[in-house]
Image 1: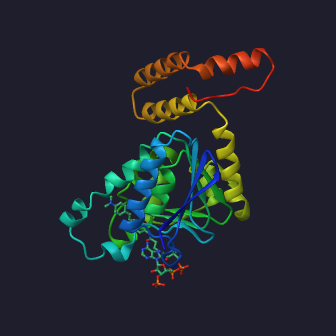
Image 2: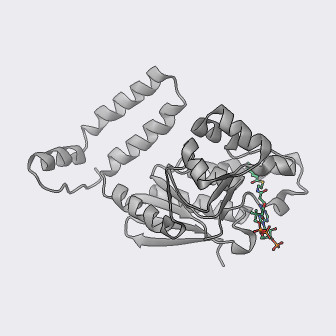
Image 3: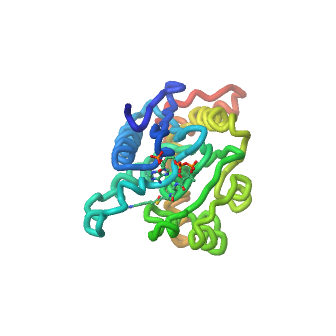
Length: 256
Ligand code: DAK
């Protein structure tokens, strides 16, 4: 069985499912490689407008596979070069929606934080429990969590390893929306459909500027925004969108 499953619920939406139910979707090397391959291919596919990333009812992902790294040394961990695999997800130019049920722990929480939007079920749990097994977050958990929820909430989660509920995660800004468990995937797919109907160049520029700008000084970030804003006025979809508004009709976006 492949360790991730790929579906096209619509012609312009890719659904990526983690598929290691026997290990609570723990991320082993095969999962990470298959994820990187899927996201790299998705990035180059012009027909794709949004990606939904999910697990199963019990686990989004319970972290990196502990058994897979328990006896590894530092050089071995370095030579696995897993940051290159994570990078394929982080740098995907298409909007990514994480649909989270159950556990999103350690590398699983970090994976969810690679998404642009997180929809969580009421029973979902988010946490960075690495400290409890003698390590620390290694795929962005110390930095993306800090940026998402601020120092004091992030420190508490990372230093204690204690998970938070979906509602707590929502209150601290770690998830976009909490819905009933059974509604997670439908809500994420509906959101993907809404975003897929938007002009793709505008969507791409928004994602790129928001992510790059968040880590740049304000003046630089505002310049990035200004340049991307100006660039969009050379797109056919900008003309189409504004003319359609003036003509009181639905726009027909072409992605150019
Ligand atoms: N790794 C390996 N196996 C796991 C696993 C994990 N993270 N989580 C669960 N499993 C396996 C269990 O061992 C068990 O396998 P069997 O005993 O049946 O063979 C099976 O999944 C079912 O799990 P449980 O029996 O434990 O199920 P429960 O419902 O009782 O508990 C749980 C579910 C998720 C609360 C529990 O399994 C748990 O605490 N899991 C570990 C959570 C955790 O500590 N996660 C953080 C792992 S460290 C890196 C970047 C990032 C990372 C590493 C490197 N680089 C850039 C190099 C990330 C590190 C981590 O995520």
